[in-house]
Image (cartoon, rainbow, N blue to C red; front, top):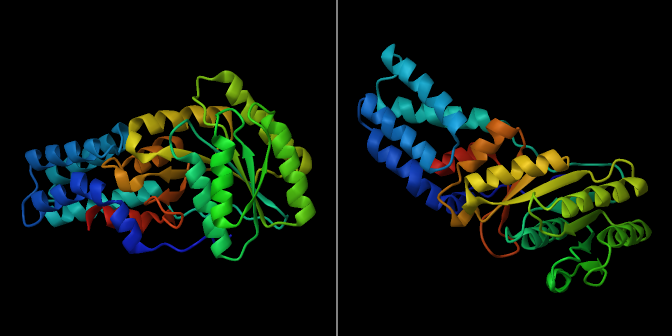
Amino acid sequence: MGLFSTTMNALKRGLSRTRETMGSPLNRLLKGQRIDADAIDAIEACLLQADVGTRATDEIIATMRSDAAAGKMDRGEEAIDFLQTQLAERLGEQTPLATTNERPLVILVAGVNGVGKTTSVAKIAHALRAEGRSVLLAAADTFRAGAVEQLVIWGDRLGVDVVRGTTGADPAAVVWDAMDAALARDVDVLLVDTAGRMHTEQGLMRQLTKIRDVLAKRIPSAPHEVLLVLDATQGQNAFVQAHHFTEAIDVSGIFLAKLDGTAKGGIVVAIATELGIPVKLVGVGERPEDVEPFDPPAFVAGMFE
């Protein structure tokens, strides 16, 4: 599924605060300078401040100290190149959204309260519509008052139909009806918006499993994509959320929202290094079109340039 194309300028703008915290200080510190113990300590502090994570930072810094001691790295420019290479390697290659020959492609979207989950669903729907794909939204957040109405407003703005129930209705029943409608209308993509929940709310976490099972009863391979929306501004808290959600459901990718509002964009590296979950999409603004596919080389370049 060739979902959108990366716009380097948009991604670079979205990383402006992370760049101010990490890339720009490192460029000022290192360019034209020799590498010594103090410089490596400063590099370590910048990586941790950007929430690159303890494990990735420790591994990168250990290699830098070893290379510097062996005379393999003595110029600041070499250190910058090394950092960019190390970060890119940890992020791996670009991982697109799932594809399927079946219709509809089913995307289940989950996350905790307040991360921008419903807005992220709307952004995905907008991008799909822009590519000429037919989309149906399932308002399976029947737990939070006003949640269904919020998605309906987005649907009206985007010209996308919404299958909904009443507040307090069984979300699995809403999803069943949405799958019925998607199959009957032969739509390309069914996007399922679920209730925000903390990983400690066991009843709501079991509800997610039930929704997944209902989808699989209609199409055995569904959901084809399970996206976890994380708030980039939460840094390491986002990492903890990803860890717990992965234990409960088979998360296949991350939608990193609010990247434009954080200096902690390095959390992407922590998630990739320690959990092995690919970041697939990033939110870089508040408009429906402010979403980008995650491009690791462009992301790393945007952190430094």
